[in-house]
Amino acid sequence: MTALTIRLPDSVHSRIKELAARDGVSVNQFIASAAAEKMASVMTLDYLRTEAAQGRREDFLAVLDRAPDAPPLPGDDFYPTTAR
Image (cartoon, rainbow, N blue to C red; front, side, top):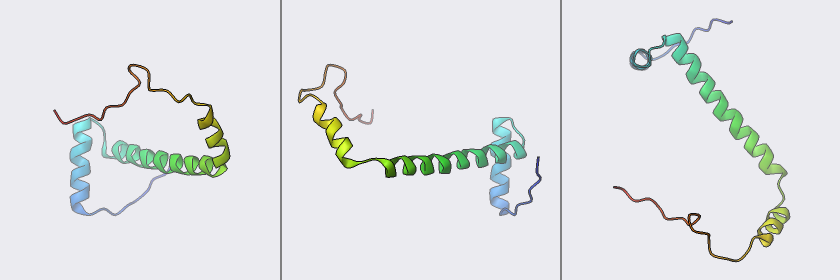
């Protein structure tokens, strides 16, 4: 494992301490988890961009052409949710 020294504004450090305590974890665990989540997010975007770059519009349109021209089945229709 590697130790890392970072400089944080006092306000950020205080908030991290509060949130870590609320989650019942150490500040170290909280920051390690936050870094891992950010890393996963960036890696996911990289993966999706790589996959998208390999796609061909002609293939996409060919798949759409095979879809039936019919209304959605019950339960498959889309109704935007409204504030309740």
